[in-house]
Length: 113
Length: 112
Image (cartoon, rainbow over all chains, first blue to last red; front, side, top):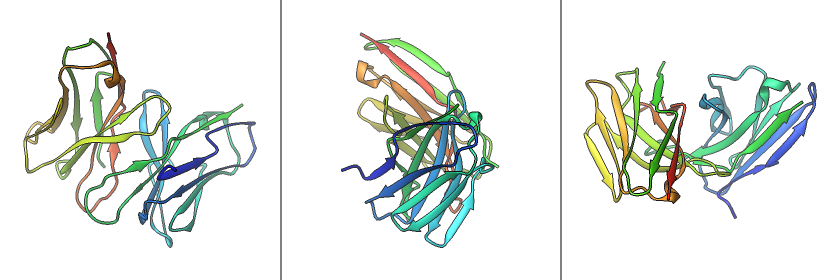
């Protein structure tokens, strides 16, 4: 099994729908992140959490919310999806100490029509 | 805040040639510079990193160099192979900040 698992892997939805992307990890890491990947824009940080009671906005948090349900689970929600949220979303984890090494999931491709 | 620029956006080489990808960063406090490789359909994976107390680091066919004065760092891949084809991301951060800022990515294509 993968260390960082994202569900769903692919999702097509319509404008205005609520969408949740889920992430679970078996790394035992305290820190979890949601990134968005767009062609030509690289990876941009949406939200991050350093422990269960800690939630922080990244550089592009507008239109998104997150929930850290447990150390191993971190979900990303789009309350009312819009077409420009069509992108590839990645969950990542890292240990609290040591290098900033991120372990990424395989990604969730979201298409908003 | 930190800003990382990455060039080129695409790079095509013949198998066996060398490939170089360059990044510049803006925050002089940054002291950790990793490189991630993203293969098709997968998430990025760390391939090499360098800290600001060294100028160069090698791992088999890949190497990273850092010029703190100019605030740029580069990834060098020698003897490229088709399996090196992927998207490569550079990133930067500093101790205590704990958030990586990524470059925009370079798509490397190695032709047999």
